[in-house]
Amino acid sequence: MSKWQTKDQLIDLLCSLVEYPSITGSNAEIAIFEYLYYILSDQEYYQKHPEYLKLHPLEDGRQFVSALVKQDEADETIVLISHADVVSVQDYGSWENLAFYPKELTQEFKKNTEALPPDAARDLETGQWIFGRGTMDMKAGLTVHLSLLEKAMKGEFKGNLLLLAVPDEEVNSEGMLAALPVLDELKDKFNLTYKAALNGEPMFSKYPGDPAYYLYTGSIGKALPGFLCYGKETHAGEPFGGLNANLMISYLAKELELNEAFIEEVDGEKTPPPISLMQRDLKEEYSVQSPQAAVTMYNVLYMKQSIEDINKKLIQAAERAKKNIIDHYYKQASYYLDEKQESSFKPSITVLTYEQLYKAAVDRYGKEEVKRRQNLLMKQRDQGDRDFSTLLVQDLAALCKDITPMMVLFYSPPFYPAVSSNDDPFIKETSQFAMEYARQSFGMELQTQEYFTGLSDLSFIGPVSTQSSIQQLVDQMPIQGKGFSLPSNLMESITMPIINIGPLGKDPHQWTERLELTYSFEKLPVILTKTIHHMFRS
Image 1 (cartoon, rainbow, N blue to C red):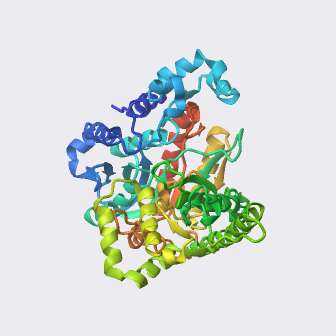
Image 2: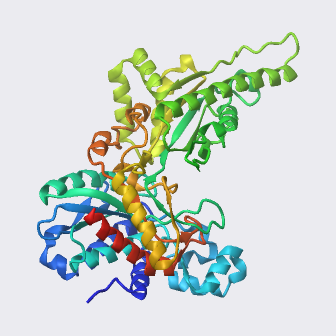
Image 3: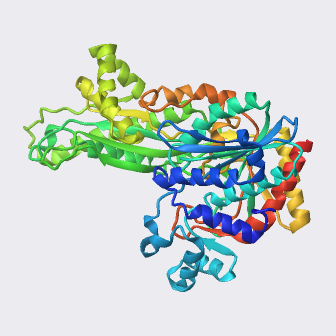
């Protein structure tokens, strides 16, 4: 008897998944994978074939699930990719306690439609939308994948399905990175040939009110470059005796925030310009001393441009900021100092990369001393990846005071390579089939987009869009090999064609996050079932 096939069954399954408040890094993020393992192990198929179902540990104690359904001697395998973590829920305000109870939250919203944005209120009135954190991103996709897996258990497909449900997609994608060697092991252990990876991330609107339905043949790339601005401290009573790191970082923000030079257009698709995701000084207590150091990190999205090009644009922005900072300093000093007075501090700013700063520190103190200091910081570490990356750069800057003030470019996790199968004949043909089937069976127009703009774990197994080496980024990543590792070699070896066909929702990462039920749980499962049949025939 099937458990996950009808619309009502899928809604119930979705709600059972959403009721685990699996915010990235929380205990519930661990618990939801134990729940997934439990409901899958309850299936007769896995009671007969327990070797095909496994919980895999991450180094930090989290875990992910792999669930294989193998058809006799078949080797062709479609990999289903899903993540089960979600972002936090403080944005729900007075409804925070209901954020993980979709049916109850939706009913409560019906009593308070005046508090909803107009678009959300209109959707609510149709009765075809359900609200709640994770309903759209991406537990609906996971729900549909479980439905497909159940069909495979009943012998629906001629080939194999392998479900990978992973944690941490919303932060560092450590779940997917940990799954790469497992994919390699399963391939050899069960004689699998990976034909393609099918992701179930939801459609993202290209603009507010966008009525189109999309499938994606790739996933956008994301880098998180940061700048450490290391100034010259001074007393507030002698403001021209140093250079405030907050002033430095402010001018850098003017150069980088929404900078059009970073907008990339490929066949009518555009990347949004950079925005700052974090900006602060590194002073830990109040005093009248100016902040010596400050840090900022920027969300940079890309499609086909190289890491080398991105680095060049970042350094150019820093050089422009450098000139403007020095001009500002002397202009303001002219208003304060008399004609015969002159400040003993003459600002000059060095712009360099983390790799260059590391070399400068080694030249001054030797490789062993630099390594000792970094090992000590690792042993005492109590920060997240981004703060620890900053600390590693700040410590090196403190060793090189003779070249301060400085602005240092570095990268922190996460990094998502831009990937695309848009020119892959198999994915092209698969996309055409899915679009034609949706048109003939449901009278709806699916459109192909090359890049999924919401970021996805497909970045770690799809064909990269640019020929530039990931090493150009790794070289500027202080945390690489110090509690974090971007396995560039493994990422290149576990490459397969990719496609994303997911449910319809709105407002991901917002308190009005919601899922449309008719397409997502009536039409989409049929489209995917027929498409997978077609993929195994191709």
